[in-house]
Image 1 (cartoon, protein in one colour):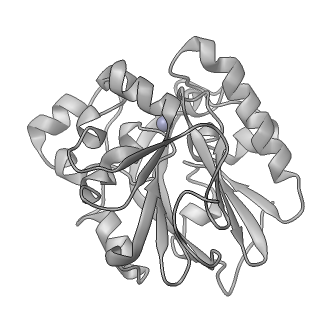
Image 2: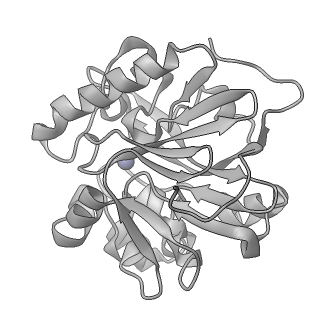
Length: 273
Ligand SMILES: [Zn+2]
């Protein structure tokens, strides 16, 4: 029995790039160069069942990004800032993909960092929002801007937050995988498409090199989470070696899927490696 009431199986995965952020390589990958910056895509996806869909992650809150005061308070620090395209990228890209918000069956958020939680503004009064319990506990008791969390994004009246513990089937062919370490309750997502499986690593592996070279993410909420982050990357590396499974990094500017947003599988498709 899965959490969301959806019949059928996933037919397509829609790939979204909702903005960009400058990130030091050392933040993305353990052992990376702290002086080299990557302009990393802020990614999200939709699992499309034809008659229903599920949103995975949600990008920045563009209203905050466009308000100078709120932006300064929340998004600009050290060398970090949020870069967003014109319009409302989540609304615009889901429309372009042909997705109807009335058919949205649920949303799952990998973790509540502010580059993943901003789209929750569109979900008040809407379908369930699924988060790992450990993530929610941290996000609502400890986390603030210092941890790159924006509590205003997720402590929003009208959100139907559902908490899960570890690996959990969310809908047919869609499973949450425990990959905590980057944050206390980070999760990745496994999507079983008709002829292949995609695993969205999200921030358990920003870059493809994390997965291939088994190098954990460069930042963890707490240094004590480094061992968990390494276990998460070992898990993703092992999945990626299985025939028919592709593990996609969450923020890799060089990863093909985030260079050409669109539907997957696509007619002229590429595969990993
Ligand atoms: Zn993150």
